[in-house]
Length: 198
Image 1 (cartoon, rainbow, N blue to C red):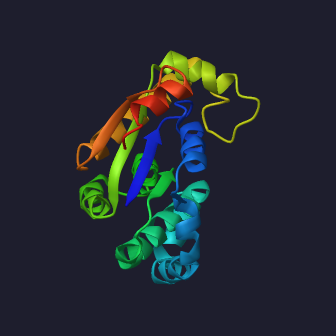
Image 2: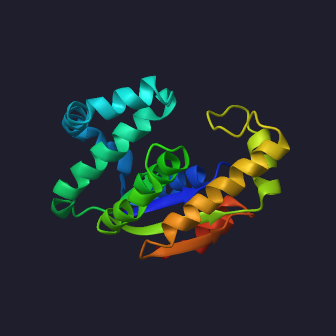
Image 3: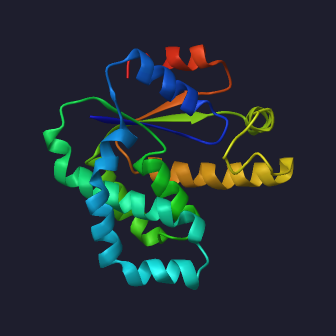
């Protein structure tokens, strides 16, 4: 069973993820899929032409790791998930990666529906964190350090970024079966209370 936490920068999903890992007997998704390095290698070999095109012609170097991780993990889980009886919790898992890759043009819109159907067979539930853009902007700006993309944007740029990605998330989540929405305007404790029965 895989439960993925999805949301924009500043929604608090990573903090909730850490708290849930600490308090529940569940596995970290990224610890599970990292053993599939051989799938990554196989995917790279089979798709080397496409990957070179992304790097050289389309200048998408920064997203190659996400691209390879998405397809490598997808292949691994489609093959092995039925053998796993554990509760697996994901932050920036397959749903998040599909949103990023489609928004950045590495996966075509016509392929998103097909890939979403494959995700439906793997991801048991998606918990979608959503908050007002003004709240997110203040949280991101007040972070001491972050590798998120929003920290160095102006308020206008951040608003456009959030609107674009929210639309992308909504498009993908409409095609998934079980989605629970969480109001992320409040505290971490409030968010944990909203999802206590997932």
